[in-house]
Amino acid sequence: MKRSAIVISALLTLTASAGAADLGWNSAPATSPMYSSTSAVDWNGFYAGVNGGYAFGNAATSPAIANTNNNSSGWTGGIQAGVNADMGGFVLGGEADFQLSNLGYSEPAAGGVGTFESKLDNFGTIRGRAGVTFGQVMPYATLGAAFGRGTSQIVNGPLTTSQSATHFGWTAGLGIEAKATDNISVKAEYLYVDLGSQAYGNLPGGSRDIGHKFSVIRAGVNYSF
Image (tube, rainbow, N blue to C red):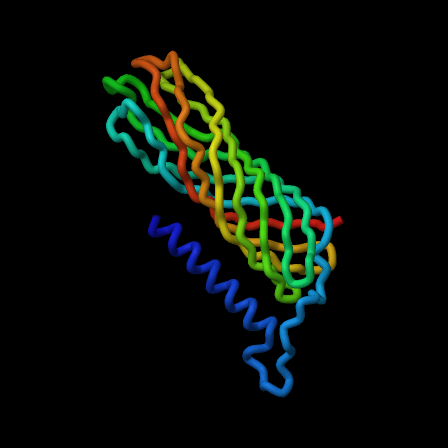
């Protein structure tokens, strides 16, 4: 949670700095432009892009092998697509994304025979976005649904016994996006994802309920059509 708070504070600081720079707060009063409800940059339309980042969080395992809550981490990368409606200084939209991931953890299996591994193979989100534009810069908040596909397995030498399950949950976050050209924009984003718990049955030593909760810090590039 400390890392999540630091990320949110950093994003808010970047947002405030970007807004201040665009509004000309560091310029002389005689030359500082007033805020206008009509954005000089058009954020309307459909877009698609790619992203990559890092995820860290917690995997809850019940019944526990050694610990009920286990730290998990890994890289993520994927694609996103969405649409914006620019209302003149205020932008509403929606975005969907799909990510490949190696987020997970491992520990000695029960009885010390082999290794127990739990990971998230992929996940995605479907979210609403709401932002305020300051010329070429748009800080935004986002909220929606999340889903993912996880695998839990016991590896004992050449023998691997695995089970998969589909998770459903929710996500929320903050981000900032900036236009590099009329069609290309770059963004930085923080998401918190809670995928809830699912049962992984027929594993050696018995079935286990495993839940994934994690934070994602990522950067991306979008192309507007």
